[in-house]
Amino acid sequence: MNNLNRLRIVLWTLVAVVGLGAAGLYAYSATRPSVTQNLGDGDYQLLTASGEPFTRASLVGHPSMLFFGFTHCPEVCPTSLAEMTAWYEALGDEAKDLKAYFVTVDPERDTPEIMGDYVAWTGHVTGVTGTQEEIEKAAKAWAIYYQKVPLDDGDYTMDHTASVFLLNKEGNFEGTIAYREDSATAIAKLRKLLARG
Image (tube, rainbow, N blue to C red; front, side):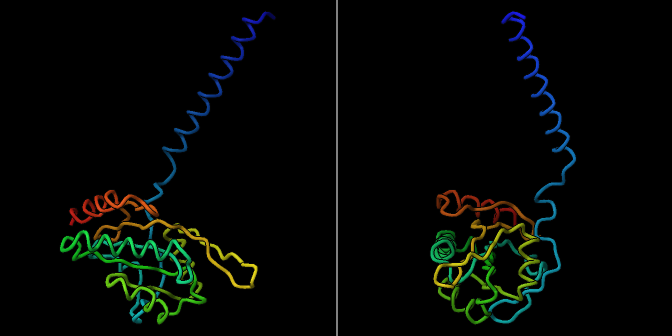
């Protein structure tokens, strides 16, 4: 077989593989459920820092920011809280109906009192905690990744999703603000959310 024939066979094989891959991707895309279709749905029973029940229904009636973290977090959580506070200040009266929630992924240490103290300085963010089982339900409902990571001194830290979720007044997912996202971009996303009423 000469080189030209070998090249043709290789090329046609590549065309066939790409074609099959594209067909498979189309079939998967056409049949899989939307990732955000039921995001947040679930029967989780949590508590705010002030002892009020916090459930899926608590996110209905107003636009919201939702963040999952923990109070022993060395950088991501305090930075995210500071950014949320700055967004409120930048938006002023535009954000009067916007709620913000900080849900712990470390209920073993984050009691309602600790959560309340941790977010108090923001003036806007509500701390939320609950039992390990209920936190697991909420994290699963929102597709949040978190994992306990042991430290050398016998203590532990938590790995977790670092995005702020944006929810409309129906409590449905509208998008995210990434960790350390440009402030102007974040505020533009919030204005778009708030404009929907």
